[in-house]
Amino acid sequence: MKIPSAAEQRQTYLAQLQPHIDEPILAVGFLASAGYAAGLTKDYAAAGALRTLSPIAGRLFRKQQVSARVDAARNDLVAVTAHRVHLFEFPKRGEAFAVTGPPDVWNRSEIRVTAEAKGKYAQLIHVAFADGETRDYDISNGARDYATFSDDMRDLLLAPVTV
Image 1 (cartoon, rainbow, N blue to C red):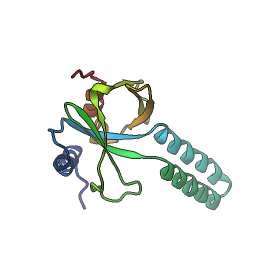
Image 2: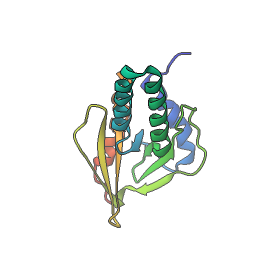
Image 3: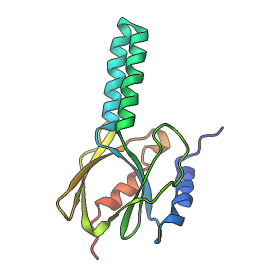
């Protein structure tokens, strides 16, 4: 089975999401729980070190740690429109994406987003809401043509919007 290019996958997601959103989607991308990518990398490194002592223990440790991290994390497929940000929960264990419920929705005029420098595995962003709440998310760095998959989404989130 052919793995779709980033452009093909983007079009698939747009086709799936647009019927659930009342204005044109300008960009799609992914947000993950803050620290998710770095945590997975740390788990794999620790398992690799343990594997030098016991291959079975290393494998079991990695499986347990990664499973716990995946269970605790949330990944969202995000659609950005001129006025809103729509977050659709993405499957955690490699299942195909399908819209299974209403998205979380943020009004773009009520949030301010800042980003830290891109790291090796992810870029941390901070979302500040008008009510004073703040949330942190990772934008994971993909491989090959997926490396910039979420860049348009990030750039729109960083651009201030006024009503």
